[in-house]
Amino acid sequence: MTDTPESDQGTSSAVEGGDAPAPAPLKINILTLFPETFPGPLGTSLAGKALSEGKWSLETVDIRTFARDKHRTVDDSPFGGGAGMVMRPDVVDAAIDAVWPRRGPLIYLTPRGKVLDQAMVRRYAAEPELTLLCGRYEGVDQRVLDAWDIEEVSIGDFILSGGEMATLVLLDAVIRLLPGVMGNSESGEDESFERGLLEYPLYTRPADWQGRVVPEVLLSGHHAKVAAWRRQQAEEITRQRRPDLWSGYAALKKNDFNKG
Ligand SMILES: C[S@@+](CC[C@H](N)C(=O)[O-])C[C@H]1O[C@@H](n2cnc3c(N)ncnc32)[C@H](O)[C@@H]1O
Image 1: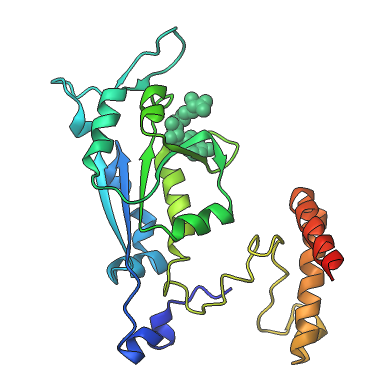
Image 2: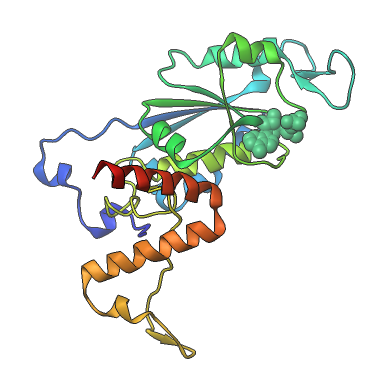
């Protein structure tokens, strides 16, 4: 796919036509003990450009400002004993309350959550607003998660030291899907996961690099043959590397075939 900002390739149709309203920007609220983390890498490249163009906006809420004692304590030891500390429900609740009115999902990044996938990313990219709670220590008191009916999301089966990196990952995936952020409107559609398959192999110039040549079909200019080759490669790679994805894709394909 092409990660080229749209404005690098010419103006968008909304600007050309002058009448279509620009899509509403995505508002992103981040509740964190480390607000200085943001926008971080999201201030560069495509996401950074989109931020400066107003395609998304960012508000960070410093959870520590809601601590009630003079030491600005945000955590305490777990009831029942055990290692580490837990983020206090009263402090986290006050931080959540500060983002009001809130028009979209409230997401807590946690290894216990539903593992993020491209379908979830697409759903989040269609929201008007996202609020993300970054955990630290051993995590957040369960009662505040229950009280706010928070959506729990994981970025994979490993443990980070805080939710900030997970938030950056989720947001990077979401922001690139916002209207006008990627150059070519089709560029997202061919990517891994979008059709239930991993991506086919990619090649660019030179056609012969150190004796390794590009598959001939890609030089043929025959669009149907290129598409068929790519599909076959994507299927083969998915079958070999990701049996979990492959079984879902194969079932869908069989279903389509049976429908005629
Ligand atoms: C050290 S971790 C806590 C791990 C927790 N005690 C457990 O065993 O599940 C601190 C914080 O990092 C974030 N975090 C760690 N790994 C994550 C992952 N894989 N996905 C999303 N967030 C993660 C969460 O916000 C979590 O509250």
